[in-house]
Length: 439
Image 1 (cartoon, helix red, strand yellow):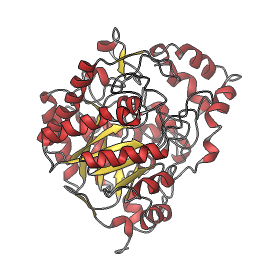
Image 2: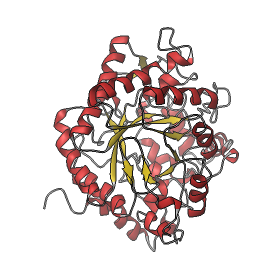
Image 3: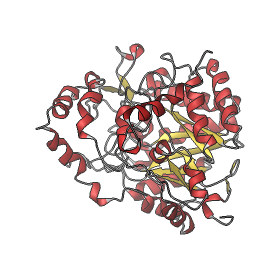
Image 4: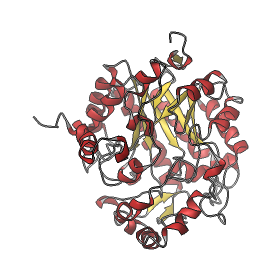
C-alpha cells in the first residue's frame, strides 16, 4: 500500500498532514457547563489520533457564550481557555496527528441555550425564526457584527497561542456565518444583505480580521455549504444559495487568505441530505424532549415525534429528497466543481468509509482529502483498516443514532446491532471517561 493515494501527505501553504483522512467536526457534550474543558475531551480526541487519522477538526468550539449550540462544549471565548486546548493539542500531537480548531457561532441555530442565554434571543442576520424548530433570534446591529468578527479573530489568536495547527471557520450547516451567506435566510437591507457580495461580507471580514491577528503563516480554512437546498424539508421554503454562488464565495475566501476549503451542503443541521442515511423514528420522541422548549415549533415537532401515527408525516417530508443523493460521498460532485475554480486544497465531508470510494474521489480530482465523522465513531481505527487495504468488518450503518443521542448523552455509536450486547455498547460509549478527570 506504499503508493496508496489515501496515505500520501497533503501539503497546505502552512501545514502538512501525513495522509488524506481528516476527522470531521463531531460535536459532543464532554466538557464542563461553563465552557471549560476536562479530561473526557482529551480522551475523546486521543482515540482518533491513535487510530491513525491525519488531522482532527474539533467539534463546534464557540467563540462566545452567546454562540454556543449546547452547554458542555469547551469554548475559546477567553484567554483562560488556552491552557486546556494546549493540553488537548499535546495529546493529539503524540500520534503525529494535526489538530485544527473549528471556530464557531450558533447564531439562531441554538438547540439548548444554557442558563446564561435564557433571557436573550439568539443573534443572527435576521429577525425571522428558523423554519424547523422555530428558534427565536434578532438581527445583529453593526456594532454586534463588528464585535463578533473580533470574537472570531481572538479565537484564532488563542488557538495559535495554544500550539494548535490551524483553525476552521464553521461557515456552513446553518450556523451564524451561513445565516449571513444564505439568500434563504438573510433578509437584511444594509451592506450585509441583498447581493451575494454583501451576504459574503461578514465571512470575509472575519477572514481579514483573523489574518491581522495571527499573520499569514497560520493555517486557516473555511467550511462552506456548496448548496443550501433550504427547501429539502419544506418544499414551500426558499431554495437558498446555488452552487454557482458558492463557487464565487470560495473564490473570494481564497483571495482573502484561506489555505483550504472544506465542502459540505445544507442550510441547517441536521439537514435531510446531510448527514445522509436514516432517521431513527423509534427514538425521536425522547431526544427531542430536551430541546422542545427552545423554539416556538418545538411542541408541534415533539407531538409529531411522540405519536407513532404522526411520525410518517415528518419522515415523508424528511426523506423526500434523500433519494437524490448517495449515502457515501453525498456532496462529492459539488466538491469537484468547486475544486475546478480554486487553487487551494479541497476537503470534502459526507459519510466516507469505503476505501475504494475514497481512492476514487481523491485520484479523480473530486477532492484532495476526505473528512469523516460517523464512520470514525463506529471504527476509531478506520485509517489503520484502510491502510491494510481492507474495509471495516462492522461498518457504520448510517442509522444516525449517534446524532440524536448527542443532544443529551455521551457521543458514541448507539447502533446496538454492531455490538454483542447493549452492555458492550454502553461500555464503549462510557470509555471516553477513562482515565477519569481525577484519580
